[in-house]
Structure formats: C-alpha cells, structure tokens
Image (cartoon, rainbow, N blue to C red):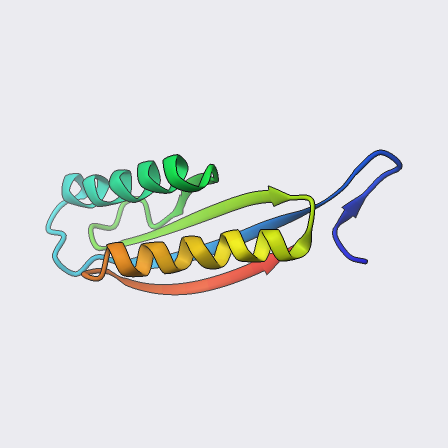
Length: 103
C-alpha cells in the first residue's frame, strides 16, 4: 500500500498541477478575474485547496495546484479527475496542460 500511514490513520494526497494559458487576457487584472473564478468554484464545489504557484507576473499564463486528501487512493483519484473535467468543461476558452500525482 502506498500513501501515508501511521498507527492511527492512513491517507492519500491527490495533487494536480494546471499549467494554464489564457489567450484572451490582456492584463494581469483580467487574468486574476479568470483565476479567481476558477479557484472559488473549485473550493466551493469540491472542497479542495487551490493555490497559484507560478507565472504570477505573466498576463496570459498561470500555474495552479489543486490538492485533496482522502482515506483511499481511488477517492483521491476520483476527486482530482472530477476537478480536471470540471475546469475543462466550464472554462473551454483557456488551454490547460495537466500533471497529476497521488501520494
């Protein structure tokens, strides 16, 4: 079994990195509006942690990390897959490269 274990609990951490390109953004303010919308919707709908971790000074590029914790590997994978599908379907105007990891 992989994941993190101790005598009281075991759990899995699901991470997904979204390397985002926002082609229509012409300012940092416009980019921030898009990212704020993504982050708020993901936090509210999926109860995940979301952070912008890269390309913060570029108008059309961003890197978001989304993290979840679950008692089972399958559950962590399901949440991460659902988050990616949600972003792709609700924000079709942006381009996303996806990198997933379950620890």
